[in-house]
Length: 123
Image 1 (cartoon, rainbow, N blue to C red):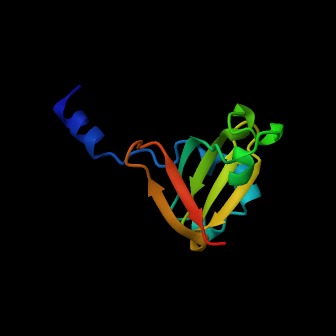
Image 2: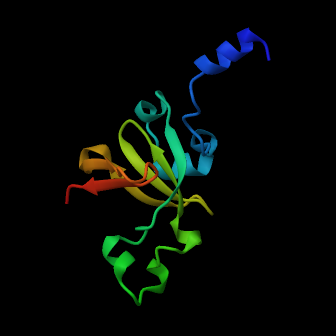
């Protein structure tokens, strides 16, 4: 690898849309993406949402469909737009949760784990 190509690779922006949301027609249609949202682009990543059925359901014992460890329910694509945070089921790209940024009270990252993200909503 030449010095020039190495320098370009260092300067290149990281992948923002890691799950390919912008190219997924079904997902964009379900999310009803506005031109204001699509112009600046999206940030996306694959996530494991252990509270896919809600926080209360995640700690209840007899709720089989709400089990936080169900991979077909907790494997999700998180998409951040300029207006919303969107959660899609990874298996079939169904839209499972839409959170307007104005509804977020706080976003926390654990000091013990850089991979744990807590979104607290105003409700």
